[in-house]
Length: 320
Image (cartoon, rainbow, N blue to C red; front, top):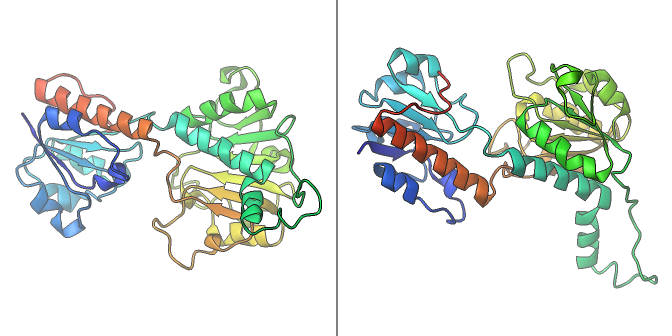
């Protein structure tokens, strides 16, 4: 059985609700909640399979792991691994694709509904006693709106974007996509639009595109100047696709009606990140993906590739 080392299992383990048996049955399994960069070489000594979520496996680090033949990324993104260096050293790298399609789309819908129904605001006011002090049967201190008929544009129409479109259509929303795909490749009820049109005409815009060198910080002051006033911006893609300071300024001057994000440029965030204190900014700590069901799917995918390696079967989701 292969020796398997998970360098940063706490990224998945969280509240302690996972069953690690699939990995324990796939090899001689050792897990470390977190691994500081200087300890990676020591902890992977003698291992054939290394699992990582966020540990940085640079070319220098990989050269200090002579027995490793397979690296399993416990996520979809693998920018923490030098995949070219791994290939040169004869190390396969595999990620886990598609595991978070439903929970991330569900989180985006939850963010939209929170904005439309002002759930957090009304719950806070009830706790503060404002409803109890109200002279009417209801405390109508914030306008609420319906998603029916609202244009929701999705920037990036991959697995998560398509799941979001499926979830939005029963609400009666007008779903649009900013995508390189042709109109005929989009599902019925989804209309292809340009980014400028999406910004100018949408009630809400959801960022679901991958981070690339070309789009880093593309949501900036110049782009937001094209937005319909009061646009709701949602980011569950990567924090670095937006310019934090420019988004905070757009919230302050009312260009944006709200900003919901599950990702920030630096994670954990710097205490002085302006989005943490900007008005109508709602930041969750990179947990949109992390339902128990999704984390279980990750464990099962990791174990399947570990078993495939042990038995000489083809690996799934090889990225190098």
